[in-house]
Image: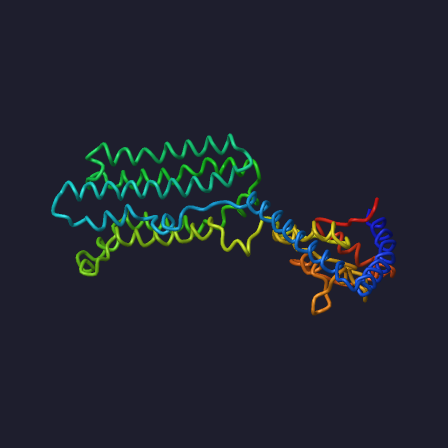
Length: 352
């Protein structure tokens, strides 16, 4: 296929040169300016169609995030607890403590749900099963904190810690399933970014369960507000920061659907370059091959701008890397074959 593309590329190169010279002469001879006017209208029409196509594809590939104000308030339940923790009215204080336990349960459950959603994205039934299981598990500590008064008492402190640890450990089941489906290496590559978050969660739980530092230095750090509960929340915030930066997509201009895909473009004029420009717009690395000296005929097609370049080429040449290779030479054909071996997509628009 590559050899046929090379032959067709050479066949098209010579007629294309004659065509662009003829069109240039016709525009110079035309004193009325009708050809230039029609050409500019075609450029504007094409640009409108191109923008519409890209916008439609963007809407298909785009995903909506949560409202910004929701993202900035993930610990609102804990904030309410710490505001009312020293309230003289006991029922209000206990109600605030209930909100704190609810917030912790929701945070752990949501972290596991996000991982399950992306882990089994291609297996909807499995994904649905694990997400329902995790949601039900997350309801257990929430219902205990609402229905049972003994839940917020000192004798059951370790039971509360154990309940939250078990809730977090429920993620082991989908993780084991993921290893069974994709192997250890692939699974490790997927979960490794959230290891820091898990380590921060576990460190905070250990500090809370062992009442550090108030057990080590009783009363000495009280005036500074440093005790196991506050230190635990510091580690929860650290874990949430790690997790949110890992699971939330950064700037969409940097991460696009076709990142990591290499496209080798041998096409000329409009059809092939248009296809490659769409792929480049969505993150693909497009390498455009042009003949030496003359380049793509589209460069000087129809009306030229003040820099001597066609608006058509400027529109279709975006998001591409261009290089000149002489396909008439053995060395050039060898280089094209090497590029094709390292590319994922080959685009050409020659006649079959």
